[in-house]
Image 1 (tube, rainbow, N blue to C red):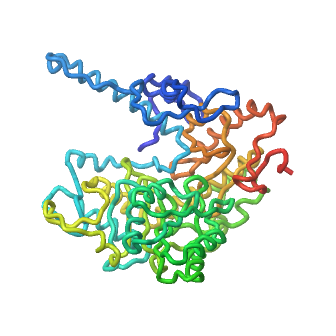
Image 2: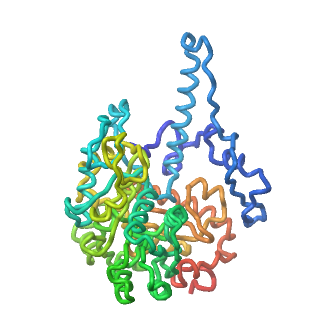
Image 3: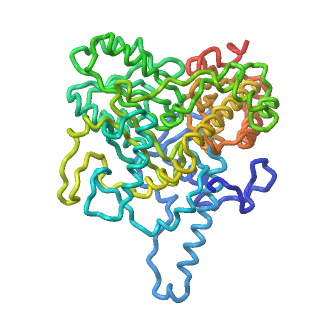
Length: 515
């Protein structure tokens, strides 16, 4: 299982001595090697030193050189031994990086050992997944099975949907927005300012007019601003990107309110909605709204942990706390055009992949005959990873709806645990109701950020609580954070930054808003 700790590395309790990583795999060594060009200064650290980002340069200091084999390598075996040593050191670095992984939404708890024998085959799902091509080494039967599962999840009949397994979530957004543009060639793309960068990449690629919409402090689209911008462009149809979990704050846009806003302002039958559900698109169907008792201030971290992660709490207690109505539904019974999710995030997969589902009625405009393949193709990519559908099929069969529901509830419980612990420690933080993304003040130490691979934006950072993120791992992170923070803010004598603009006054715990 990915994420296991061994080989003498530091365990979650910090009880073993850290064995240093090889220089070529040490994140601090790599970063230090990158930050030597004065032309890449983008900001200042708290101590006045420069914070730099390197873009657009070929960097060879982190390169493992490819060398030509020597004439006697087959006899001596030195080349094989060298490569085995490099790979062993790399594996050790992956174990360490996985153990300190909190800021990005990847489920690292998976085991596909049963599929290892398939790695000997070049499996390629060329073209349309529903039409055979001349290339016989494919996994279309697995792909269509996975697509049928997601179509059922989002309530679209088999004869009414089309889709495919993408190479990543970005490809799903590129395809969904492309379908929208084909349906409404002169449409304007509307997306909240907190949408994933791939949405704006799609606008540039397709030369689409794009309007950024303001957001609420939660990160959710501001429908008042959306209405104002729609009214300014009434003559053109609307193509809207809806976020089912924004990148930084995990906010879920109010789909029903967006549809109501469109219809009330003269856009009935003149809009196309793509739902970017990269992470939460798969979690949402299994979320039950959180009862307020879970997040009450009176809940101590000790009793919280006892109640949620051990067997001391009765089943009825957990049921009462986690059965307070259903989350808003993402369904094709509503007038949406497409939904995309990432397969390597909540599901957990060793390769990036995703799922894109749209209405069959929309796809003919994109599809074309490809004689070379003896098939049709309406996908973005030509060759597609045929192993990815097998990984997804395997996990969906092992876990099923009930398995995913349990994992979603675990993620939400642990996210609330982290949020409560941060609040107890006097750290400003925010957790949206339908989310497992905990937003908090950005750590002042860039080495700490890199160590825990935290995603940051301005004054805030976040932890995305996935199925592999346990209470023990969160406690380990919190111990290190609180120890570092006491130094940064000199035992509470220096005020932390004000986060009212980013997470709201109610969640900010700077000196001005603490009381």
